Length: 110
Image (cartoon, rainbow, N blue to C red; front, side, top):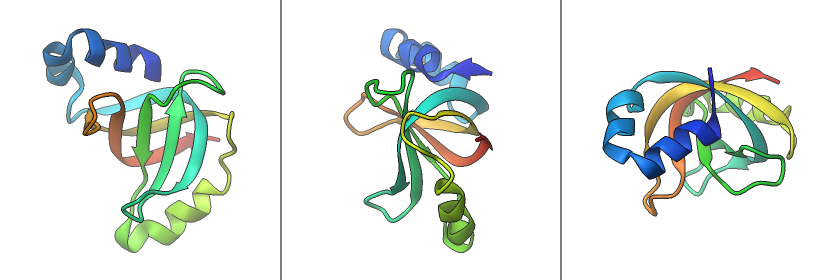
């Protein structure tokens, strides 16, 4: 288990090393929820940081498609500022190169 800031910093400072170490791996990450809801792609997401009111560091995408209903129901348990623990596949940095994206995530806590 690791913090979202630790992984984000590694991608900022040593992107090639971070991609080799983390990309495609299932990681368990501790973070704080900034928001939870529907993305512009209609997928269930949690936007997260390393502090309750911190900068956006990661987007955790929960299962969608046939599993969307359960994922959106689970998102209702997540409140802004709440500490969360998420397990998911570390995929990439966002298009702007500033935010980590994790796919097929599972909320472990809350």
